[in-house]
Length: 181
Ligand SMILES: [Zn+2]
Ligand SMILES: [Zn+2]
Image (tube, rainbow, N blue to C red; front, side):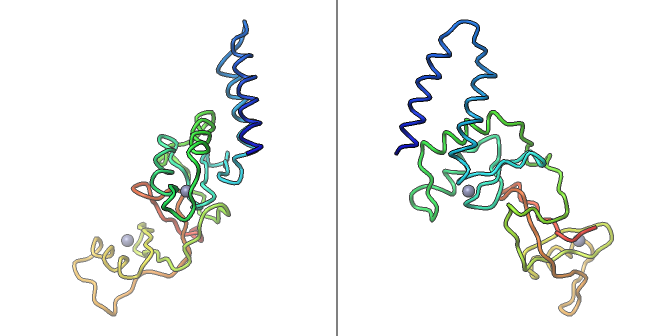
């Protein structure tokens, strides 16, 4: 409650400043949002400038920069395990708009552990030359292997168990092997 009141007060002060002459709305607004948000949103999100992404700390997965509210509607309403108040969701959206973020397809995967992201320990990586596809179950790896050959006998196995991570979930999910060189 104290935080809400403080934010409200600063917000009003900000509006007074914006009414003044010679105000550069974009830069000062950005500064305001960045300072405020970094402090009181840090229990919800982590900004990783190296990868130009924002990680949801509740899901340990990245929030798509195009539509952060959607992430909260899908995962953090009152019926979910980790609900996030509507006010906070909008603050996160405003904060993310001030950051220089990558679209999900542009993220450069590091092929090493990113501590802020969830680790899938029971993953699999295809060993077919130059493939490197990853799945989270052996049966889906077996299904995947049909892209390489017509028949995949039950005893056949050309993949290895490994740990995986993905920056995004949903249709932007892309698992990578943490130990790929
Ligand atoms: Zn989340
Ligand atoms: Zn493959």
